Length: 116
Length: 115
Image (cartoon, rainbow over all chains, first blue to last red; front, side, top):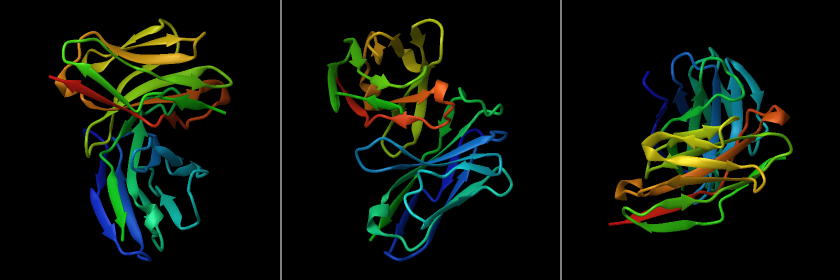
């Protein structure tokens, strides 16, 4: 596609519900990142994939957070038993085909999650 | 370890005047620096990046940034501000020497351009 897309754009969940956030990266991009952006803050790293391999998940705040990219393209970030502190914008970014360390990351519009 | 600081939460400038948004960084190796802009309810849009070479980097929408190694700074600049430049600006750094793919973002600076 022309850019990174994310769905849904907005999600309201009751505390304790499970949610799944989807990211469609730019076609052919090897690397995919998930970030969490709290209100008034910069993006904070959650996890990183190179193709289907999850190379770094050090930023996931708890074992309630899980991400996958089974075929090396679309990725899903799942949050189980949501808590109010999970309320944030979740951003996905992908980077160019070489997957090199200096590649530019291109961001999707984000999913705004509100946990009531 | 890598870190980045944006010392101003907000910058106000009149349309037509030059603007500067400040960023300082800290890395143990060589820095890979970039600027993004975020409009309301939108994702981050890439503006420009510095890896190596010329210290003055030119990017999208007339923006440029100057890498200063001695001051560990990477300030974003534009000679003549537009009202449409009003947005949230993020500086980010990666430590190339550390081999990390993971950038650290600043807290962001809100730029307000007054007509």
